[in-house]
Image 1 (cartoon, rainbow, N blue to C red):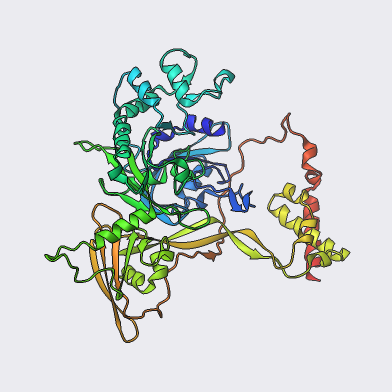
Image 2 (image 1 turned 90 degrees about the vertical axis):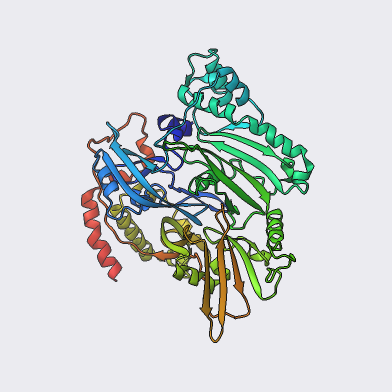
Length: 576
């Protein structure tokens, strides 16, 4: 219900493919932001220790001078622009964009709200008209679905509407059977238009499925389409229980579907490519292991004299083995008159790779290398590509990271058995948390936790990290290079595959370059010290009639004089 409420206030379809809304407190802490990650996975989802105190500057970190953040903390109204680097696919890939920010305060609250629009998206809209009858007919087809978290009609406001799906609510609203339903008529008219325009795809996909010769080995498993109104069409070419990646296009794979925060990943990446180019990738699971499929998608853009928005994206999911087999077959087809290749990937003297624009391997002769970052396998070649400008290293930051930390080897249970040690520990904890204004969380802590923590165990603690991502240079179509490797020279050639984000890399393996270290994407922990501007609320709310003060314990009785008196005592105690 909260999701629908937020979407109804700031409709995602009006913000463009990369646009988003966010809100912060008077202290700069995030209330809503698509990059806020309050949970982490460690066996089961858990809240991060500092999930409620993530600062806006920790997600909009390109704003080095905190211009946007400080203006919002000071409750101003204005605009701001900057180049940004947005990570996707679990931080493995990066999209470079230019964002325009619009912000203002929310009257009567200590909060401010902002909207970010990515240039090139969200400024122009395409609209068309179709009859309600035709639109509803095509909207109710079995291959059609609407974005689960988008609000076309508000079915939550009245109890009698809560059982309705969005498509059912749209039908009732547009046929006049439920005139008191609150719906976004403009969005509904656009989604009806998309349903009619994309309807021929169903017959086309059905024809392909019936034509056995087109997909005889069932290498292509799913065809899918998404439009800017949140409408999706899918067609399965194999039974659902035989899909290689059964999470795709489901809520289990959040980045792959429309939701309140973002468009699908395959849509967003396709939108950043040259019109007509396909984006190929291997999706990664949460276990950092690639799934045995390849996704290919491309954006659909209306080309005319005006600025044309991207109206949809279409793609397929295919088996990785099928894709690799097609690649190796193509590599063996040479243009020589006798059909023989002067050099082939079958040769033992060369290594052939197919990598994407972020340098992840899709095809290689060694199956265990599939899905790995190219620099981990060919460190010398990757270093040379960086030096030549074929790929660029982009430094990224994660201020919401979690690092594994070993528990102290000292026996805490034994040290707590000493009354003086207990007193010193309690006072130290008290002062620290007084200074952090977080008394409630300390007062309710179970002191036995620290005493029972097993020796040698690890636990997750908040940390800040720096890590690299890599992006290809679009203007470079083909490059050759030589690497001096201690007495021999290793040669390589890299060539872009037209109308795609893929590159073929052929490396001479007769020269051993193992002395070169690999190029990795491993993060390193960094220590930051900074002081952020904070602002007191303009009004005080010391009491609420529904609040139960007893739940807060007796921490509220700790006065400032008591804290002042404790400070010298603790100082002398610790120094002993």
